[in-house]
Length: 291
Image 1 (tube, helix red, strand yellow):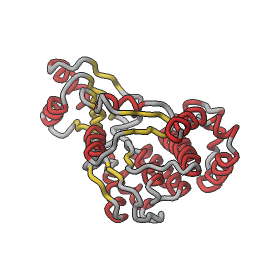
Image 2: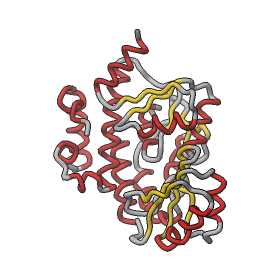
Image 3: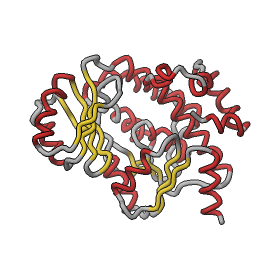
Image 4: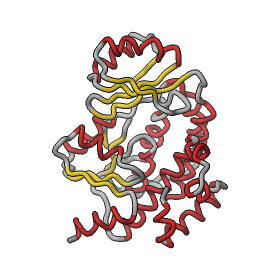
């Protein structure tokens, strides 16, 4: 992860060194050597992904390439705050380190998440409502792609009902707990204590937040939303639709992989989308848009 950035960009190497000192975490070894299981642990994976994103954002900003509007998916909202110039990169990494550790420690063992493919939001919501609070909607990722979260017993019980309702596929996600659900209440409390100690400025660019798919720029509101994110759903479908209503016509995913690029195309089939995941894709975008 981020190998080309670390090999070819001195600024990314400097940022990595600062991050390792700040977090007391062997981030370079984890990203370049693994082991994979250690890198994929919640408390490490979130930091590695965010580092990759903010390193790319730093390079794009140096080329005077900055967004007009911002949104992030779940943990990606911290990268969004960096792009909105409300949060410094090292503070964002510290926040995500605290967030990941809180989530990992608080995740109930007998819990998890399932991606439900091929059902409407309403059909999934109805099934969750009938679960007696055992299962909730965690992610509205795109039309026909909703993630549910809850106890193991609840997920086992709800699965036949989702299949009977017409779900094309149920995919168990490789996560350590029921994220974005009330079962993460303790994690939210622990994260809040660390989060409130980090400096957060008023956002310099409009950012649409997952919690309600609305723009917020006041630091106090943003702090509350970022804590509530741990126990509430990610409204990604609605957030992208909000960006469109605000005038967005080009969507650029910054960070490893192309997951969000695919989701945006499902939400807005005619949207212009780009993915920046390394120096090559970044330079291609800059050449295309800067002429």
